[in-house]
Image 1 (tube, rainbow, N blue to C red):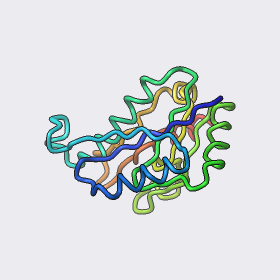
Image 2 (image 1 turned 90 degrees about the vertical axis):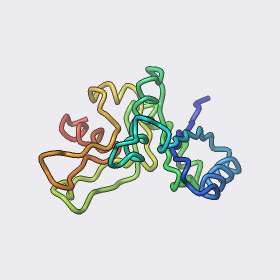
Image 3 (image 1 turned 30 degrees about the vertical axis):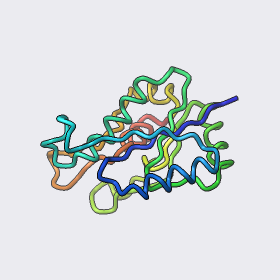
Image 4 (image 1 turned 120 degrees about the vertical axis):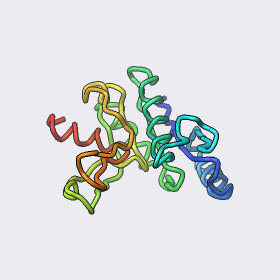
Length: 168
């Protein structure tokens, strides 16, 4: 049997009810979620970061995919995103596992030159480790582009950009 497990990031300053509702909903639906909590005020890596939450979220995602088994599907779910149709999530998971691809909800950034690029967003994202390797192990972290004011590569966006560039 395939094991679908989501990884969900949140910070200690998140109101308790958000975490509790997310956890209760997914437990009731029998969806396995592992929660990763970071205290941004105490973690030295993020003390001077302009966007510490984005940095910590991406670091967590990169660490999980890097440490995943070679035949594993890694699933991410934002703390403000809910699986309400488990059979749909399971179907997508099985397709990602079988075809060694990635999938996520469609998103774009509308305020910069990347506005016409639709990408698989981090809010509900599944990726086979072999797809990540085939795409040359892209970072899942939010990246600011220093040559452009207010332009960034969103969390998980580099995966879709590399897939588009390579015809994946």
